[in-house]
Image (cartoon, rainbow, N blue to C red; front, top):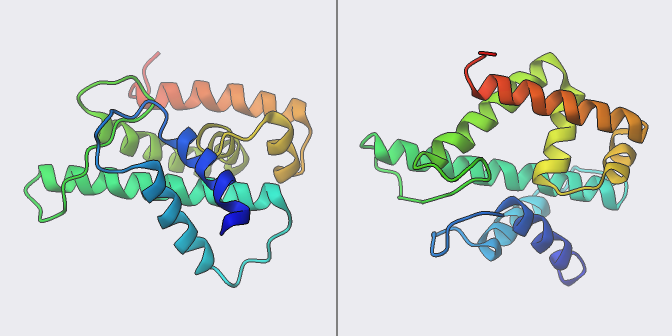
Length: 164
């Protein structure tokens, strides 16, 4: 744990950038949850640092989205524990809904083009550089930059309801 805690904390802080002060999910809790899930994945053959960071970013994204979905469930009268999240999409009163919408849009993008969705996940949630993302995906940095630009435009259109 001490060897990877610093890097996990950096990923968690990137994932939680823009979060409202005082919300119930803290970077430390996100790191702990991700670490517990990483330890539980004994079948994974870690290839290198970038592979580890990519998997960590994916897990943290899933944790944040699960919390946001739980918040929305509770708002609909469910018995879920209340969790307030603010995402990086702009600070509206619908932050959990925005995070869920982003996750849904990323899932839709993955059905159309898996690599572009992976680029977004690695860059936005994982905070990997263009070079690190290229290494993880086994493509050139130019390909990552093109995928990043196209994916952002596609997601923005999707989040706006397919208009424009």
